[in-house]
Structures are given as C-alpha cells and as structure tokens.
Amino acid sequence: MTLVLGIETSCDETAAAVVDDASHVRSSVVESSIEQHRAFGGVVPELAGRAHVATIGPVVRRALVDAGLDHHDPAIAGIAVTSGPGLVGSLLVGLSAAKAFALAWNVPFVGVNHLEGHLFAPLLEHADLEWPILTLLVSGGHSLIVLQEAPGRHRVLGATIDDAAGEAYDKVARWLGLGYPGGPEIDRLAQEGTAGALKLPLSMAGDGYDFSFSGLKTAVVRATERHADVALADVAASFQAAVAEQLLRKLRGALEHFEVRGVALAGGVAANSALRAGVAALARDFGVECHLPTMAMCTDNAAMIAAAGLYRLAADGPSPLDLAANPNWQLASVS
Ligand code: KG4
Ligand code: ZN
Image (cartoon, rainbow, N blue to C red; front, side, top):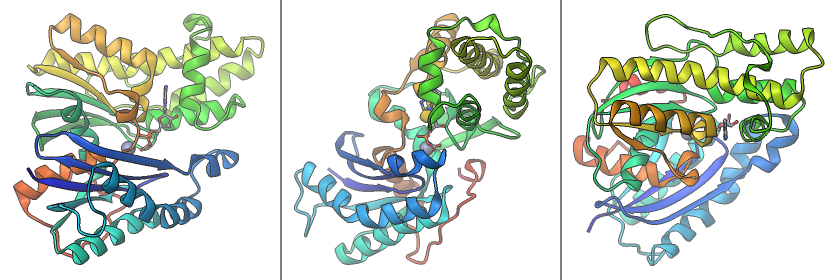
C-alpha cells in the first residue's frame, strides 16, 4: 500500500496527514494559529508565517507517529504539499519543509493546488462516489461552482467577482461588532432571528454562475444604519438567508443544466447550517447524492492535500525541487 504525507500551510492552519492510496486517512493533525489573529479581526500574514515555522516540525512528527510510522525512516512513498493559492510567507514554510523531507527520505514530492485539495475532501469520506459531481466550494478566500467529471478533472463554472462568501460573513460580523471569524457567530445568531426582517437585495440574479457578495455587505451596512432598531439576530438571519439564496440559486441553475450524479459542499463556509440544509434539499429535488463534509473536512487540513497529491503524483509525476510558491494559483489552470 502506498502512503503519502500531506502538508498544508496556506493560511492559518499548520497541518500534516498520512493518507493511503485507498483514500484511508491514517492520521491527520491540524494546529491553528487563529487565537493570535482574533484581536486583529483577520489573519495577520506575518504572525501566521511565524506560527507555521514554530509548529511544522512537531505537527509532521505527530502525523507520522499517529499513523504508526517511524519518524526517522517512515514508509512514506511521496510528499504532497500545498504550493498555492495562499499567503506567500505561509506557503513557503510548508513548501520548504516538504522539500527538506523529500530530500532526506529520498522520495518524490508534488505541489498541490489548495482548491483542488478541497475538491478531493469528499473522496476521503464517501467510499463509492459516483461522478460527475457539482461542487460548491466556499471559503474565506474563494467561492466557486465546479463541475467535477472525475477525480482531478474539473471545470470552474463560476466564481465570485468580488468578495468570497466567508469574507462577506467576516466583514458583516465585524460591522455588527461580532468576533472573528464571523461565520460561526452569524450562523448561531441567525437561528434565533427572522430572515425577512431586513430587506436585502439578491445579487447576480440573472443567468450565469458567477457570484457577488460585496453589494450585499454594503446593503447590510446601509439597512442597519437606516433601521437601527432591528435586532441583531434578525440582521444575522436576513444576511444568512441572502447569502444562501444566491449560492443555492446558482447551484440549482447548474443542476438544471448539467446532468450529474451528486452535489458536494466544500471549504470553511460548508459548515454553514443554512447552506447544508439547502444543498441537501436540492439533492433531494434532483434525485442526486449529497456529499456534505464533516466539520473537520470543511476547514483546511492536510488529508485532502495528500489525497489530491496521490492523484497528481500518479497523473503528472513529481514536481521539481525548485518549485516556487504560487500565491495566486487559479484552480481553472489545473487540469
Ligand atoms: O476554508 P476556511 O477554513 O479558510 C479559508 O481557506 O478561507 O474558511 C474560513 C471561512 C471564514 O470566513 C469563516 O467565517 C467561514 O469560513 N465560516 C463560516 C462558518 N464557519 C466558518 N461561514 C458561515 N457559516 C459558518 N458556520
Ligand atoms: Zn481552504
């Protein structure tokens, strides 16, 4: 059995995992530096980079030990590492570590696109996936609708033209005086509020699969200035409903247009309760399989990077040891 070590350091999570070629996760370790960023209302790149430097060694060692491997001479056949997109100072820590381990253990390594990693997450949780699959990939940095014909074969149908969905959650939370990250807090508050309380516009109502969340954020600011008496929970519920409606309308449009066997959610915003319920309802309506990730698979982790790396090593072979970090690497350029 082939074992691959995955390493992920693109944002504020330092992660390492061992995955085998039957898509079994042998170990998965995630250390987040989020506590250091909270006071600043967002991830501070310099702090994230420093945290990765301090944590990467122990995290990799723990992933090897948890998988029952000797950390001096592990039975690892390859190393997969996120080489983009992400914060350049953070990416470089994981990339340098991966190259050092590859040299020391004399095994190949491959640079993985972080977003392709998210697309491989359902493979680790559902044994018999049937393709094609439509995936809504929504995180703090990205919002995409992707048509996956098979593992590693994907087409980006649409993307946000301004803010990502998670970014909109974080910005609205900040405006409302809630903590960072804003998504979980707004999601929790929204359960206690009434969605129609604040009238908000539906962005990108026409055809096409692109999203826009910047106008919605501004609309929340204006509406709460005008109606200062609306309860916080009602604002949260109204904003959450507007985000979900936009995302789900586009997903419904794609389901009407493309014949698929399943729908999947991926990325940090896949933890959102309204989105999970909406995607499950759409899957029922269209009679397709629904792949909702567990909470651990929503957030950044290295198991999904190892899974994508296993595919890329087999399909394209290893990357050169002088591979550079690519902070703006587009998923559309990976195929
Ligand atoms: O994928 P992720 O962990 O990091 C990035 O790669 O960006 O996503 C983090 C984002 C944050 O913007 C956070 O506010 C959002 O996911 N998020 C949520 C929820 N949980 C996390 N957004 C809405 N509802 C949630 N329950
Ligand atoms: Zn991510």
